[in-house]
Image (tube, rainbow over all chains, first blue to last red; front, side, top):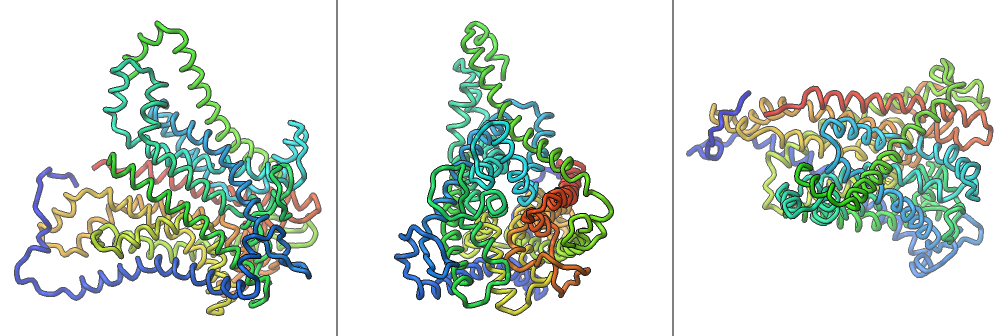
Amino acid sequence: MTSTGLTVGPPAATALPGKRVRWGEQLVHVVLFVAAAISVLTTVGIVLSLLLPALDFFREVSPWEFFTGTTWAPLFLDAQFGVAPLVVGTLMISFWSALVAFPLGLGVAVYLSEYAAPRATAVLKPVLEILAAVPTVVLGYFALTFVTPFLRDQLGVQVEIFNALSASLVLGVMLIPTVATLSEDAMAAVPRELRDGGYALGSDKLQVSTRIVVPAAVSGIVAAFVLAFSRAVGETMIVLIAAGQLAQITLDPRQPIETITAFIGATGNGDVPTGSIEYKTIFAVGLTLFVMTLVMNLISIRLVRRYREVYE
Amino acid sequence: MTSLAEPLSSARPRRVWRNRLFTGAMLVCMLVAFGTLAVLLVDTLLTGWPELDRQLLTGLPSTLAEEAGARPAILATLYLGALVLLFSVPIGVLTAIYLEEYANRERWWNRAIEVNIQNLAAVPAIVYGILGLAFIVRGIGLGRVVLAGGLILTLVVLPTVVVAAREAIRAVPDSIRQGAYALGATKWQVVWRQVLPASIPGIATGSILALSRAVGETAPLIMVGAITYVAFDPTVLGPYTALPVQIYNWTRQPDADFQTLAAAGAVVLLAIVLGMNAVAIFLRNRYRKQW
């Protein structure tokens, strides 16, 4: 099938005069729309399934206590519902993994986009995809049984058996492909003329990369960062396995902590009786998680659209 | 590009060193990413090696590590994969066709569908688990069965399939469509007989990648009750445990032998997942079409 290179006008099918209604074609259109609507229904389902039990929850526990309390002990006899320890735990994991993933991912992206030969890129990108494809349960196991002992015995860092640091480090490496591929897309969209202009003014490769390409692709790079952070906030298995399940407010990453996702995973194992306060807690916490990631995702989608509008 | 930069930089040694330092820093970034992957693969294989035997593949779960196997979990994971393919590929491809070929982007609802799918792609997997728990397991009363797990995993990977299929469809040049229209084809004939066949390699690649993600997914399955002790072969409408959930459960056992078992299970899971990735990458390179 080779293109003839002819430019034809709009498709004849829409321009024929006196066309008859093709019911089959109409039906196809409807079927396709229904398929596309499933994704919208999924979102509606997620929002409803979180919101309804969460509202129930807030009838029993005041939102004030939930958002300002500092003790999280929902399963105790004297139950306390301050979500702060979970949020702090989540943000701490995300912060440390971002500290790993942002610079390393950006470095990989600049290398792939500006430095690597095409043949090297052809090999390196699939390897990055493989890193992104490792199941998170395996990564969690790796954090617990390899990284934690390694930190303790080889590097002499006094970490607990379950700690936020190991989980964050592994999570950070897991996020490198996310940061790298999205940033590289943004850098690839920067027009060649900008680079050539830099070289014409006597810049070297380092200057062109860091002072022209990276700033020109900044909205895409920030989008990649935001999306990676959102992934970190939503990641479950690594933290559930390696970071412990101790809901405490601490900024020391060597300590065990509990994240929002880890709480949901540990509590919602299918045995919780419907209607109990534990059951409803899952949804209140889940709603908090959903809103946090939703905001970040929408920011990221916006930023990606911006660089696409500028360069493509 | 370098030909312009080189004569200048050789005249200024500081510049040369800065460039070398920067290149070195980037190589360190690459090394950390790929080194970690290598260490992870080697460490998992070495740790799991003693338990990597027939028993693991054909045995039933047990409270004794030396007798335990993952046959029901592996079977259920295969069933889950089949269900995910069965549901997600048709729905995903139809959605992609709608968005690329039919949807009028002037309409706000079509733009909403697009943003919605982009957001769904980044919703944490465990949130899908909550949806499954509330709607599928409890809401419509399907219970903790393989089918419920398959449905939830379908929703988790659906955005991936849609995005891949859209890219494949978009890559088909317009001249193909125009040619078919010129021969009197209807819109659906154009899509079904020209656009879709031309985009099959891209769709296949995306579907396999989505499948590999579904097979390795753990968190949503924990939520929809893939229970951890199943000592019989699963059926589509029966209770089950999946391989990742089984591995998770083994990592929680205090007995060190179970840690070895977890590593052995991880090797099997990695073999399945990375094998699928390799097939996908091969397909993409083999059938990449230059129009």
